[in-house]
Length: 275
Ligand SMILES: C[S@@+](CC[C@H](N)C(=O)[O-])C[C@H]1O[C@@H](n2cnc3c(N)ncnc32)[C@H](O)[C@@H]1O
Image 1 (cartoon, rainbow, N blue to C red):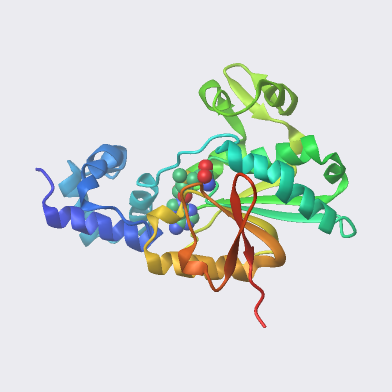
Image 2: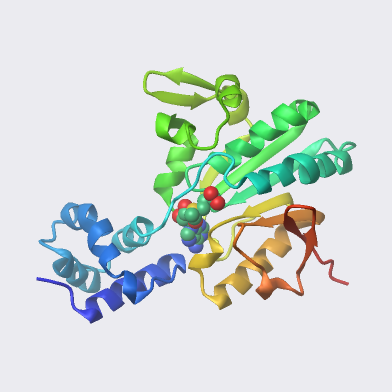
């Protein structure tokens, strides 16, 4: 049986509750496309039968699986050239200068998907600021989806993934080939760690971060949730730290917390200190 509008409304509600992601009703057909494996694994005959199962037998893992399956995990190494130019030329050198006496850097790839963003930052540091190889550096990647977190932890990428955005020289220097896959080198792995985390739920204890990358995830949240996420980002940001958003994203909800600064090509945010 085909799903009714109220079945889809229920599925959208499950996603909203679990991950704060808003799904527009015009995209209802995505549920049919993306939930098929979960529907079968749960022993339901079709999506409508599965909705009944969710409604009657409130197994939390099934609700989480629905939200996870509906996430959009699009990412790539060095995604958005301008942003990575800005990191290489302005942000990372400035942070390294400011932190040279403590020799410690904490970077957060919030919504890290399959890990390419975090590993790209590690490559930039090793390549352009080699002194940081002897520092206490941690790049923490977090995502709501346990599946992509495990993928990032595994640190093995298919040819199609390394062909997107990773310069050949970096590929050969920082990854090794193992049959059809490329594996992140142990020295990059040593500075990157990944964990499951919902940005819209109360956050676990976190260190103070020098740089937060919050890219290409805000668009899935309501304005209220975006406001809450900015507050959380402000709490964990060093007063002289940086916040980077996706290219098409702006931080209107955060104007009392972060201020935009501009360089020739790109812009970024700095926390506004509370008095
Ligand atoms: C489009 S990817 C962006 C990945 C990377 N930041 C980039 O820009 O390439 C968005 C990621 O946000 C994650 N996500 C969605 N809602 C989330 C939430 N409430 N908390 C944490 N991560 C979330 C998704 O699982 C997905 O992997």
